[in-house]
Image (cartoon, rainbow, N blue to C red; front, side):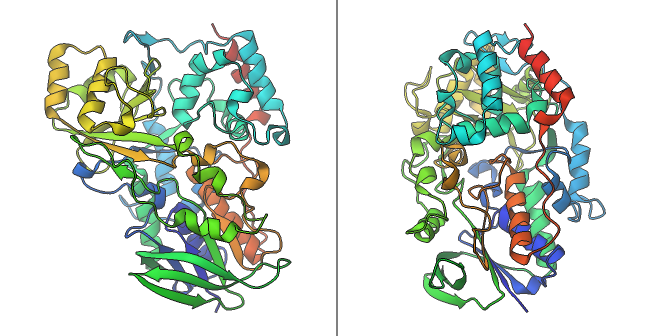
Length: 514
């Protein structure tokens, strides 16, 4: 029987294993997954203790928009009730959507910023329409800032879109265009995010644990603490075939011979590689340990023009880093005030005048005790209250910066300081999939001429779809399995909101509201 070897322990590899069993007819015992870390979950591995920090709640889209994810999880039992699938829980999340946030943006004076108008000038509208209509090939290598004037980045729309999807002006114009076309229907709902479902668990508990349990029940072997260092390819370029896998386990080198008919699926890169946690009294380490997640891609791409260019994504840390923090407290007063201001559980506030471009939110998280959380899109700048970059701040200093931007009375602010423990986390590569790139910088899921090798995850190319989503990882997995096995059942088409006349009309109306 053929065997399948999966490199990486994130959602892409877990989904690939499930598709191999469901669509490819593989026995679970013939599937081996290798993960460098001690736990499965990849970038969604946010399990831990309150002292380590927690996770923001999972956000999922309706089935029409994330069809691959819903299709996969339709057969995966949920943790809460084995008789109910995870996909059914996703659909139930519609009831957890906010009907309309009371507030979404907070200005420099602590006042709520109105979001009825997107703040566009006529030039902003023309530039946005031009970006939507420009063929993708004409945006090759361009940044968002190359397509818009300075005013666009001060609009209400930009603050809402960038804080929701983590875009920066220096990110890829291609990815920005894809996100606009993919999620154009969210224009009228952008202030409230009412089109986004909210899960009552974090992404790890909501998606990873049920899927992992299902795979283990089917006999899949998960090799943790075991990282693949290189692949041995057969000579010649006409037909790419993996002949052996080189890996390291507990400090010892091993080699696996890949038989004809066996498959190798490789997760490229890592969004949360080298993530470093600080504490309430200490900043995250300035140079956290880096794994081999990127090194494998560099080795594979050396001397080849069909395996992409990892340097485009892992050599620009100042443009891809992301800082977050979680807050644990036994006093519900601040969370209650935040939910009241932000329109309920899961609502979020973005401080438009913040040098760090801070966003905070209340919502269910893991582990227990984490009651609110936040992130910064510009952590390299000095704070408005704390005169140093967020990357160099302890949890206490970050809390002081947040409280500086909120119009709280002195007694409540004092209670928050006394009862809160803040854990910061610095992640160098989180927004790396969004960096400016050319079309060939990401390899095809199944490179032309490949016999048994496929690439999965956020850095494999899927035309039209938007990276930085769970759907993207799941879609690459299904594409890889179908492509390598020659299956007729291909992934469903990417949702294209911009082709719906009703969506276009609503978006145009939103763009012109004053």
